[in-house]
Image (tube, rainbow, N blue to C red; front, side):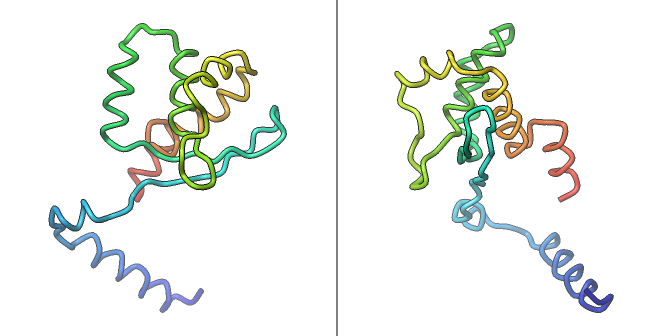
Length: 130
């Protein structure tokens, strides 16, 4: 990429950063991120999505400080895991079965969920640098 091309890209980011948004701008934006996360423990990939503000609020309320981290890890993975069509991957009964699976696989997915939601150290850095 040439220096001139870089300057054009940088200029567009500056313009975007200066734009004053309206409520409609924000509410119309599809900002739920999805990623595929490879889980070698299970031999495949799981599609994950970021949480909405309401989902995050409900999740935090369901697991007050002091709750066991492994239980909340399973639940946040279950909440963020989706099928190709965007529907929930696990049923409530399957969440109970998921608790019996490899903690390593669950923690691998939890790490990615935290990252895409800006809750991990890496995710916080990405948000800060955006």
